[in-house]
Length: 369
Image (cartoon, rainbow, N blue to C red; front, side, top):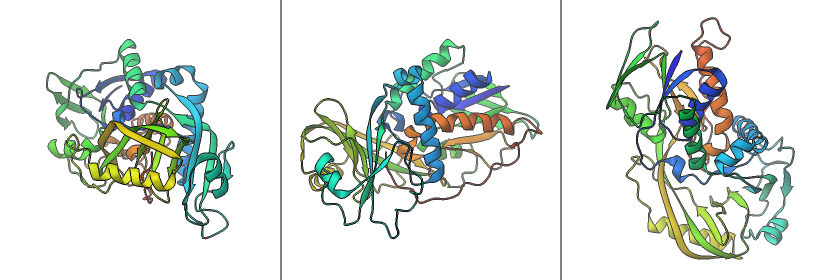
């Protein structure tokens, strides 16, 4: 069996790696050449707590694998640390989606948030989930290490982009053309993030519009005073993490829907909004000059998370593996393992789970890292 994965971001690289190392599949990974992508821009926050139960399950599994694998820790530059997830005031005894906290997590009230972590100005009734065993990693570092390992294992990783493809019928495979070679595979997976819609349209494949693109923006600053741990504040949208000694990464969600990948700019008025939000929520944090601006475009799917999905009208030979927005770093390890297994199950007639993939359940997607 041979599978072609298009896109060498963290999602595509990990999916190819799972197929090779855990299933012995022959894989071609079309890296597409060097260009800015969401993997390079990601802040890399990892934690087990999420409000969506399925995202929480995948995040917890990914964090557990990361913490127990020395290889993955080294490849990803994993830095353990605490995580704060600030929730808006609840209408009941507990905020929605928080019936089961991760085993090491605990509730953190407004007083502790202010005294210990410097978070102030929260709405009355806001609380946070504190995970002492979370942290952050480098999605770009993990991607590069995984690709190096794939090459060492004999996988084909050309720096090519997909130019054309055709399907050889319900029982056949896929023929594809890059800028340099013509190849074949049993199935092709587009793990191309915000480029997925434009790619499918350029190949003449109907695009159902389920994936949306959106610009993301954050920055690394000189920082002094009280630096908080990695955090997400749903009451203001502000998120961030320490980015080294005397440095802090901070960002806010943008409203730049429909942004074209590869063309997004870092906007000054959005950066000023981050400083203003930090001044309100983190008055004990002293922000200095901007050191490293980051702007990218990411894909948002109907499930609100990184997911494998078949493309209609392609005889079950073309899939996408994307749609998780900027928060995919925390669940990519588990999602790639399950996607590899699900993909092979669909290609094996009579195997449980080889039928049509269940429809994704739309959820309200919050842009967090």
